[in-house]
Image (cartoon, rainbow, N blue to C red; front, top):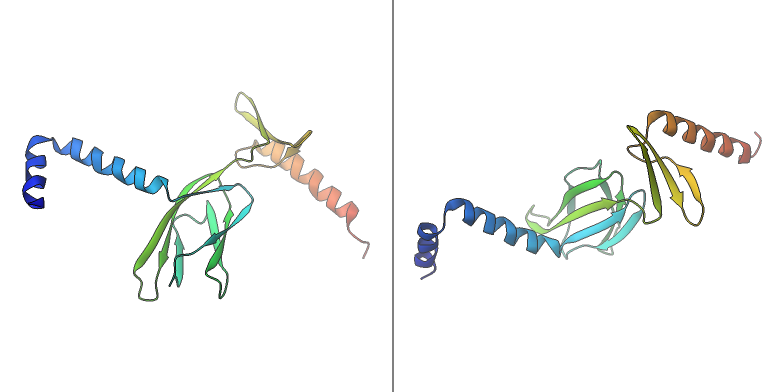
Length: 157
């Protein structure tokens, strides 16, 4: 019966409509599996039972560290964007898949002047911070100030 219905749908609906419906179904199913992590922060996640390997599609977006003996891992957000993450059992079978979405902090302020971009952390006052996508000049100056400050606060050797 299933094959008969499937064949009728193929005849009635254009193939593009079927594909769109399949992708929309996948999107809805995947929506429940989205893990959101703030840039430069980490999150602890419980792994599916029997997980022995975790694969991250793009380690430039997120990285993982497996914790021993407790079935958990730490996801560290490295860059903006999305990537997928697969959990495999000891035989290499897929036992779980999630989408990892890296987002900006809630208290971030982005100042855009033409092509020039600067980032500020506003919690509670706005202070310059180095962020992906900032202008090279702004990043260099801000990182230099942070480095110089850290040098002043380091114990003398």
